[in-house]
Structure formats: C-alpha cells, structure tokens
Length: 304
View 1 (tube, one colour):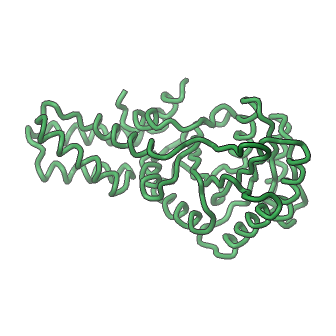
View 2 (cartoon, one colour):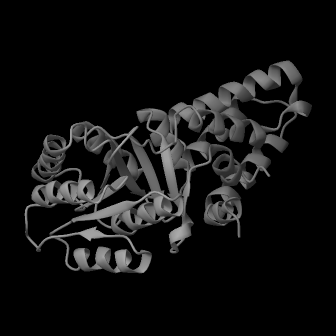
View 3 (cartoon, helix red, strand yellow):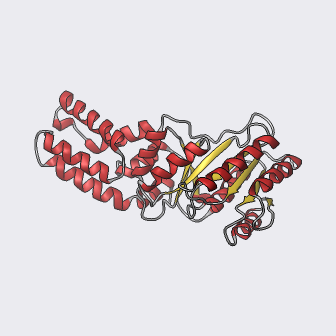
C-alpha cells in the first residue's frame, strides 16, 4: 500500500463525512447561496481545518462560481488545491548542517510517539547512507530508555543513555560529545513527554536546549514537535505553547493509521507557519515518511 492509499485509509472517517456533506450542499441548489456557503463553512470547520483555511477555501469557491458558474465549480477540487497550496508554502526538508553533526530535538506531550519517531528518523538517515546516533533523554518515563535501546538494536543505531532520574541535560551533553567522537552526521534527541501547560517542565526543556547549544553552537539545529494525528484541534494548543517555549522548526504528525483528524494539521500549519516534515502512517520503520503536500491534500478530500 502506497503512502497516498495509507493516508486515504487513515482519513476515511473525516473524508467520508466531509465528501458527503459537500456533495449534499452543493448539489441541492443551482446557486451558491449564503445558506449553502454557511453550511459548507460548518462542514469544513467540523473537519478541523480551522477558520482561516476555511475562509480561504470559501473565498476561492465564491470567486470560481462568479467567473465560471456552478457548472464549472468543483468544490472538492478547489478545497484540495487550497490546502495543498497552504501546506506547500513552507520547506518540509530536514536541514543538515553543511558539515559535521546536526542535532535534532524531538519534543511533545506524552503518548505522541516521540521515542519510536526518533528511532525511525535515525533509520531513515541511515537508509540514505548517513550515520546517526540516538540520545535517550527521557529519564523519567518507565522503560523509556529500554524502549529506545531496543529500537537501536533493531535498527543498528547507537544509543547514548544514562540512568533513570538522571539530568536529561547532562545526557544530551554527553550524547553530543559521543556523536562528535563517532563523526556522526545526525543526533536525534528523544526528550521526555511533558504537558505544555506545566511551566516547570517546559523550563527543563529549555535548559536541555541551552546545554546542547553550549556543547555545540547552534544545537539543536532542528526542533520537531511530534503531534498525535488522532487528537484533532487539541493539538493546536500544544503547538502554540511548545513554539513559545522553544523555537520549533517543524512538525511530525504520527498515528495517521488510526482514527485521524487530518484537517487539524492544516489549521496548525496555517496559524504557526511551521512546516510538516514527516508523517507516521504505521508501526514499521518505513512508515515514517517525508511529508508530501499534494498527497496529503488529495487524501484528505479524496480528490484522486
């Protein structure tokens, strides 16, 4: 099953409801009335696309109707095109430093899949022929270190770890030293899950980043927020608060193989201007894929 098919399957619940509603609303009247526009707005908002994206889609639909008439109006095609356009405005590339080590901090709340995502990213880089190291900086969650070590063994990726309850900033410092000593190209730092509402935990994350920067100037070079694709608009507040605390450079959306609410991805990217860099559509290492705006938009609206 290709990436598009996996995304389409993930979004079945969202798209089937959305497609049905759009078809019902648009086919009911030969004109695009104020009432039908209001209903379309409600349908798009229910799909978690957010108000700015919804208004952008409706604006384009109204303009198309005025110039082409309803016979030439394909609302789903317009919506998919506008979503793709929005998602494609930011660079989804994971940027390596010109030379030497690139440090990537993986952050987020509990349960989003940061540990497995860290390991899958390291595996992806190794598949590209670039060496990678993992840092087990979640020293609080039970079995978190063992989980990362198991992934490291499975994927043949070195893991730098310390003891439970150890200072995660110290582990990050040591991991950079070890990665530099190995002449590694990438270091992926698996940080502890933390509620975005807990100021003390966010302050701890800031400390980890400060220590990394002291050990290697500019580190972390990328800070990626991992969001659970099934949480919908609840992920918006997480993204806002993490972005305030540490400068995020991108998003990773996981668990898109379940009951996903893909529209929230669009809303978050639209508000914060953060690129979606990777998406997770399954449990296997290869199921973490670089983000493709067109495939995502097409799957969300079943436009292909």
